[in-house]
Image (tube, rainbow, N blue to C red; front, side, top):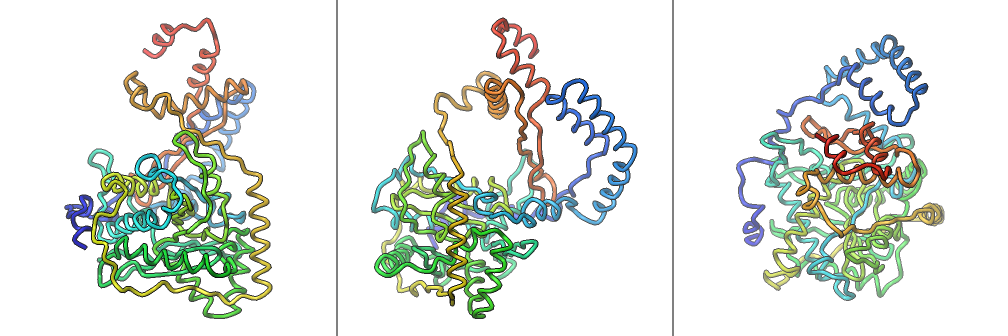
Length: 488
């Protein structure tokens, strides 16, 4: 506990993580005129003159007819909700979707630690795992204690609600619509689950990460992981119940109902996984990775062994045999910026400590992990088998290209008076234009966290100006000086 309190981010801060939630402004409803104007602007780069005139006429009819009626209904809805979009967005984009989540909805990412203190090395999986677990659990405690600094733009606080959804959160399949269960509570709100679930070779274990009021230390975590690893690698593989989570959503819902009907204890086991702080996977794969080439590690994080991912968990922390780490996260409860924040925090701690544990090596006598053994029958085993078949069939149709661009970075673009994001968006447009001779349909995520429970909105980065620029870049007669004159 003393070590935790010494951590610079865990020191007392005046502001609490969620203290501004009740004072955030409601999500506004943009005017109908403004929305339609933006729509026409986003259409213009892709339409010829005749198509654009026809679109303008359709917009005019809509604006003067059903559009006005729908807009009034939207304004009425907004009167009774602090965020009129939240429920619709969650249902339509995530919870009503019936295709399998893991390959179509979940997002993944590798940890950056391999670029400094933790290069790929066999035999390091468990020791590094105990350290990375501990740093992640420290982050969990920061949120529990509301000591994670409030994100701000200038002096304006942003919505922090998504950080409540990172831990002890799970999607639960439904026949027509899924739901999200969040068991997380801050210390001031009361009890929050304090166990993690560990997946290894088709088997599932849980253990508490606190003992006598404190986080268990890396040496103690290592003892728990070693126990699970040795047990799983000296005994037969388990049935692989987690693979059911990679199935089509309605099928998974039916299998889950059947599983619970087989034995009521199965529901208790499911709830232990659902409520766990997060899922930790001990994966026997050793993905290739270099600072320039992330292809294989990303592919395995996304399409790897489905018995080692609980696809509905908000956070699966995955450890590989060669000491590489990554995550697989359900997108429904939060956006990737939350995971980026966690990953940055952990990376900073690993840099600070040179990837080593510098505290006491003493391990207390804490209870060994508990294995969750489901009651299964031939039907469930067949469902698991079918889930794997459809998963690997879909996964085989997926290719990932992920090379790091190392020639230059944001410092150079800023030095030349260009915002790094503008530079990337234009580079994407130019690449597509050179390949296909026409503009590319795309969007960029815009943040709406200024508002209560705000998440993201769509920003159309393909503009008429961007296309003119692409055309000038293809024209050998265009000079740099002309570009500067246009810019001014």
